[in-house]
Image (cartoon, rainbow, N blue to C red; front, side, top):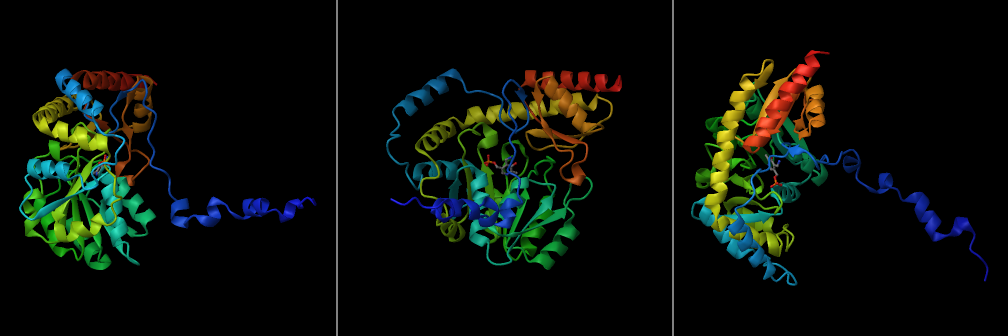
Length: 376
Ligand code: PMP
């Protein structure tokens, strides 16, 4: 048999021609992956998780239920019972339906995939949740970010002008906003919904810690949908978010939801936990108390500006934010450094409200770091 010369081999041709650069869309090549830093060994105050575990009896109940779960079978694709529980506990107005996502991130993606017609725009405010821009970009929507006012409230006039100019198919407003922590003025949000030619998604990821919600207003606007997640209420590891709104819209988005996006175990465990909603709500109440205490403690540290929060985190502005972030890390405390990202967040740090002891350790480490930096 005559050997095939190297330059004629199919494999070597394929190797020289096919590269990620030649095949992958330029907008994807230009993206940076969402960064999740290693956190082992740290007091973890970077990702808005609920710091509390579950009571022993509830854990035993969960273990028992999980041991009997039919994990050899696909999950109920419609997650009917889970959706019923959510509908009831959320107090959805009549005629409103629920779409489930593997985290609310997945719902943002479903929405963007559905609405990414040629030249379609996804509009949000800035600074806000970075995944709006990232998902818009990789789903082929044009992203427009309208700057918030200096105090991070909505710049209503600029937002309305941008809506008129860009005619966005999709508007996202995080309510409360991440990473700033504030609730926007509800009347301004209503004006944005009214002025929008497309859908407005009010993202209530932090609803459990906030004093207001757009759920009761769902039936007032036919272009309003409300998105929530259970991640911040103590189920980040289960990955469950939902979109609430009229069936007319949700039945279209259902076509893009992959059939088994919520597994057997998440369906089972979330249902059990929702039966014990009171436990989660009392943990959220505890977090709100800790938020007040943490804000009070931060107010006593010179050189720190805090922003009001209706979420389970606090935004701080401080000189030498990156040095402080690193100093905290050396002291085994992990928070989020926002400095160097959006210009409005220069010298900003975001700390998740943890359990009392974690918050105390954070405050002690922060004071220690600031003292050390002052000594040069
Ligand atoms: N929306 C906002 C405003 C968020 O801050 C987050 C998480 N940081 C999400 C949505 C996504 O949450 P998840 O995918 O865990 O449901």
